[in-house]
Length: 328
Image (cartoon, rainbow, N blue to C red; front, side):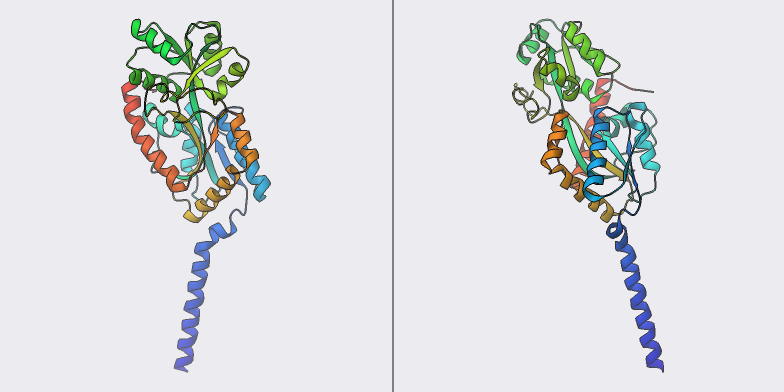
């Protein structure tokens, strides 16, 4: 009788242990069992929105998931990130973050209630976008070397327009000044389009912009691209040299985009999301859709994406402080 009780007790323990192990693996095995929300921290129609909806639509098409794109714009994209950090870490609330709001925003805005390295989990890098330095088609500047020569001859005389103070695009211009040892005059605008219009009109000498924002005017022959700021040439503009190729070795500034989840999201759910998003990025039609936006698809593991965020979060602290830009 005693032996039978022990046998039953052991069997019960084994069953309980098996159930516990099954519960531990259940999140990824069954995920998702309901709609997934993908927060987009910017208004509809911009680069982040387009990429986020591409991810949502491809996951729905390939995996039959229901992914709801939810625009939460404001404060340079930091409002949407804040909402994501407050969500339950279950894998059912994600956010499409990007460089400006994740690693630059915390150093620009005085009192953000989150730290990207502690309050978010990196899920999947999606793409990066080079910044471009361009000028009007009728400009006297034919190359980046022409700009540098003019700026050295007359410091502060050469002007450039950007989408606004504190953006990664503005700071890319600031970094180029330092790399080249020149002084340019920055003219901040409220968005890319006003800066573009003034560059076309000749009201500013140069435009510093994302590739997607400038692409239509470059293709129309109204804007002359001088250089891109990324380490590699843009596949959308393969004939345009990089700043590094133009004599400033190691120069590499680009804006990247990726999917993140609240800190504490189960690792197996993160791994499943990463696998599915990376499969999507490998499809020729998805690569073409991303390239059409002037962006470059780039898959990473969660660890690689996390390392990128951590490295750039530390790096951009000094860059922002050196620029003197601060937003209350």
